[in-house]
Structures are given as structure tokens and as C-alpha cells.
Length: 263
Image (tube, rainbow, N blue to C red; front, side):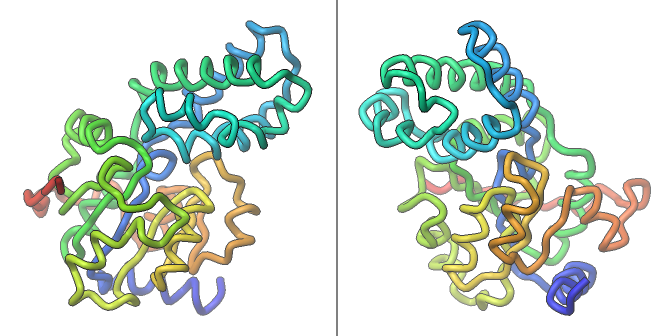
């Protein structure tokens, strides 16, 4: 572990971060299985050969950038969105579009039952004692809140910003602008970004914030490593281990109740 990594771990242990921004899908919520199921069913139904790992990486990255879009916007921008998907290279564009939209539609349905990663509540309960916790997601604010309320996690977060409330999407650093402007008293090195996609790390670094890459979502660990986050881990469980938190030792008595949804 490098000094940089250890500094992040030590600061998490000592709870010295004042603001922690989480991505949602793939970071807090496990979306890999619903996406794999949507891909596999669609490609087999169309009798198209595919390699799951490569397809998952490409479709997952594209999905991450459009999941907050309404369907009409996806259709209007479909050529730009889907033209670079190499898994569809040999297909006419209209067929490519139909398959991509089928995967997207199935994923939307299957992901309704997606679960939070093990250890999420333990981590949030530990971190929110001294830090303000936020979510900045490319998903819709309403959908993020529905998941949080379902599992009684909404009270851990000071605010939730979905794609419908952001001035720009990650990897643009302005994705964090609403938070940075509202909490100007928090210095850049007291913010921490935790995300599973390259766009999370790129946006955080561009904004001058510290970053944690977590390889629990769609992106492979080596892809995240190339972006040089300040700390790179495999899972929430690994993060809990690093900061010395055991599930049985975490109390639920310190949960904040100040969730605000910005409009």
C-alpha cells in the first residue's frame, strides 16, 4: 500500500473527512447481475454471439451515461450514443438501436430488485458520525430515493443529486458544483469521492478532490487503476476491513435525519 493509499485509509479511520460523495449504481447498489441478465437474454433471443465481459464493459459504460435520460432523448441522440459500441459493429444501425434499447428496457425492469452491497449500512453508519454524506448519480433522483427508502438508508445522506438535478454529468467536474458551492467552507482536501466508474474518478480529480475507486461495479479494476485514484479497492467489504469496522460492532444509534432533496 502506497503512502497515498494509507493516508486515505487513516483519514477514514479517524473520520477526518467532512464531505463524502458516493456514486450510486455499482458503488452502493449492485447492478451487475441485472445488467448481465438483460444482456444475456437479449443476445440469445436475437441469436447473436457475444463475449460477456467485453459486452458488459461497453454496455455498462454506455448505460451509466444515459440512465438518467428520458427515452425520447435517448432516441434523439441514439446515433451518437451507440455508434461506438464495438459489440454491435457488424449490425445495421437500426438493429443496433433495437437491441440496445431492449437491453436498456430489460435492465430497467430487472434492476428494480437490485440490492445494496453487503456492509453498506455499516459503512454509512460509521462515516456519517463526523462527515456529511451525499450521492451524485447519473440515475434519476426519484429512483435513487426509492431504493434508499426501501432499505431505510435515506437518513444517512445530507442530500441526493440525480442526473435530473445536475448542471453537467460526470466526468465533467461541474457534476459536483451544486455541492461545492453550497458547502464552500469544506476545503477540497476534506472532500472524498467514492465511485466505481472512470467518470467518477475523472470528475473528482478534475474538481481537485480526493478519490476512491471501487471495483464493485461494471469497470474492471485495471481500468480504474489507470486513472490513479487515491485509493483503489475491490469492494465495500474490503473498505470496512481496511478501516477496522466489523458489522457486529456498528451501532445504528447515530443515524442522521437531515436528508434534503434539492430542487
